[in-house]
Each structure stands twice: as C-alpha cells, then as structure tokens.
Amino acid sequence: MGRGNSMMIGIPKGSDWTKRRKSLQVRVRDMYIGSEHPVAVQSMTNTNTGDVKGTVAQIVELYKAGSELVRFTVQNKEMARAVMPIRKALDDLGYNIPLIGDFHYNGHQLLTEVPECADALDKYRINPGNVGFGEKHDDNFRKIIDVAKDHGKPVRIGVNWGSLDQSVLTKLMDDNTRSKTPKTAEEVTVDAVVESAVQSVNKAVEYGMEPDRIIVSTKISEVPYMVRAYELLAPRIEQPLHLGLTEAGLGSKGIAASSAALSLLLTKGIGDTIRVSLTPTPGSSRAEEVTVARQILQSLDIRHFSPLVSSCPGCGRTTSTVFQEMAQELTGYLQDRMPDWKSAGYAGVEGMKVAVMGCVVNGPGESKRANLGISLPGSGENPSCLIYEDGKHVASVKASEASEEFKKHIERYVESHYQKPIAEKERSH
Ligand code: SF4
Image (cartoon, rainbow, N blue to C red):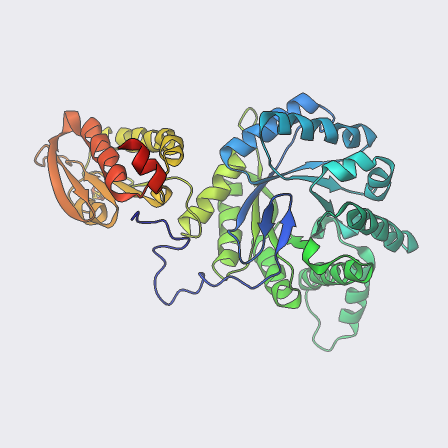
C-alpha cells in the first residue's frame, strides 16, 4: 500500500486543520466544490478573452499546470461571443475544465443579450459592488440571478474591498460614528465586506437561487484584514468559500503574502477553492500562480500533487554545489516521472517525500524522515553518500554516481511501495 495516499498525512496530532468548515456542496460543470471535496485550485487568464486562440492556449497552460477551474473576464459583447468558441476548442482538445465568467457593471446585459455565453459558462462571478447603483443595483443583481437559474449555473458572489457596495459601507460607517466604542475605518470596511457578502447571498436565495448553487469570496489585499473577513464570514453562511488575497503583488512578495493569508485560513479549515493572484513578472508564465497554489496545499499536507524534494539550504560545511545541483535535478526528475507514474496507476506516489541533504549534521536525520533520502558528504567527510529508505540506511554510493544510483532507488521504491490497480498489476504479469 502506498504511503502518503491519504488526503491528510503528516499533520501533528492536536493540530486542527484536518477539520474543514462544513459547507454545502456546489456543482461546477463536472466537479463539486465544498467541504466534502478536496480544496480546489483556481486561476485566471490575463489574455484578451476576445482572442479565442490566445485564451485557449493560456487556459490549456493553466490546466496543464494543475488549475482545476479557470476564470476569465467577460467585459463586452465581443468577449461574450468568444466564450462559445473557447469552450468548443477546449472540448475538441479534450479539456473538460470548468470555465468561469467574471462580470463587472454589465453582466446583466451581456448574459441576457448573449445567451449562448450564459450557457457555455459553468459559473458566473458577480461582484455586488459593481452591478449598479441605487435601485438599479437590485434589478441588475436579480437579472444575473435569473439568468443563472434559467441556465442551471452556479454563481460566485465575490466581494472585493476595492469595489465595495458603497450603500453597505456608508450605513456601517454611520452606525460606527454613533457607537460609544467606534472601530477603525479599516475594521468597519472589513465588516462592510462581510455584510455585503451575507446580504448578497440572502438576496440571491430570496430571488430563487438554490443555496447550493452559490460560492462566496471576500477578497482584500492586506493579509490581516483578508483573514479577518473570512473568519467573520465563515460562521455566517453555509456556502463554500473561495479564498484569495487580491492584488497579492509581484514575485516573492506576492508568493509570501498569499502563502501567509491562505495558510492562516486553510489551517483553520476555512477555504474550498483557492487562487494566488500573483502579478506575473514580464515574460513569465501565468501558470506560476497555479504552481504556488498547489505548493501551498502540499506544504500544509492538505493535498498532494507531486513528490516533493526537501533540501537543506547549505552552509559553510559544504563547499561544493553538488547537493544543490542534485536537489534541482531530482526535483525535475520527479516532476518528469510523475505523469508516467500516475498513468501507470501508482496510487499515493504524489505524497512521496524525498530529502537531499548537504552533510552529515542534519543529513541522516532528515533523510530518515523522508520516504527516500540521500545525505551527501560535507567538506572533509568520508566521500560516500548515504541512501535511506523509510529511515533505514540501505546503501552507500560514490559521490560521482550518487545521482544515478539514487534515481534507481526511487524507481524501485515506487514499484514496491505504491499500489497499482489490480487490472494494471495483472496486465504487467
Ligand atoms: S545539512 Fe549540513 S550542509 Fe546542510 S545546512 Fe545543515 S549543516 Fe549545512
């Protein structure tokens, strides 16, 4: 039986992040979102949706990186009309990925005037702060809900503090000025974000939307306030929650801020889908946000996608870069082999842990905690490399042959420790 094939391995006893907040289950195309299902990874394109070819290419890129749902903006009629050919192209290529249309200001018009778009999409994202003002707000919101009902589609009510429903905010600000213990403006804004989400859910249900066709998000760009908003929202509604730190930023700042925000919530069992809103560096792949989202889930042992390599940072005890190169090579090797192992049916191999350590100080100990580990010789140490399997020292190999020998151990370990389906086993005999 394969190790690591449980949804939650390695989480210390006493930690409570194995407990998901209970939510309804929402069907989006052929997948379900909610507490009974794995936390799903979502992403968003940055192509012009009207450019069918470019958008399809990016959706495929995001899908191949592991995105399980993809959202794109639908801003005008040209984009609305592009949704059908996008869907068709993906279907023709065999990609059954759910597509979400992101609407602001004119969603009620586009969805009614281009009904094929409403039909081709699998979910509509509505921002209650951007559906119109005054009386128009409720009318427009209702029109979108009516379209969703007519086409049997779920919606995400996505509140964003950068485009908050001003009527909700103004009321809470007024209440706050009369309070004996007034809150800060930011605290009131967080309350207004949550209130807007709850009121919108209630309104959608009042308009006839089934409660299990609604997903909710309250996105804020600052970690403490974003976390607080979801903490306040979670006990007030029964719908699944989509998590995201909006405008997370560029590079390491965006990755660190998103990891902090999402982890604080996921470890409390809050969150049913996640998105990492990275600003891509010029020329970089849009799919980086998917890789980061998956790595957050895998680092928390919430889901496993591909075997991970743990490696030490290196220090003065190891003057060679051999172990850095080996960690890099093995990371690539495991990523390359994963599709083959998966298609061969090795259940649980995605949870395999591999350690590459620079010297004898932490090497053997850390290597023993992984499924497979290799401890390289540090400066002045015996030049052989120690290989461990499930904590047992199984081989000592020459440094020059370490990488190739370790790969052979990995292959043998996968063969013997991760169960193939019976039919697969029989076929191979
Ligand atoms: S395992 Fe050895 S080389 Fe790596 S950081 Fe620790 S002491 Fe330094």
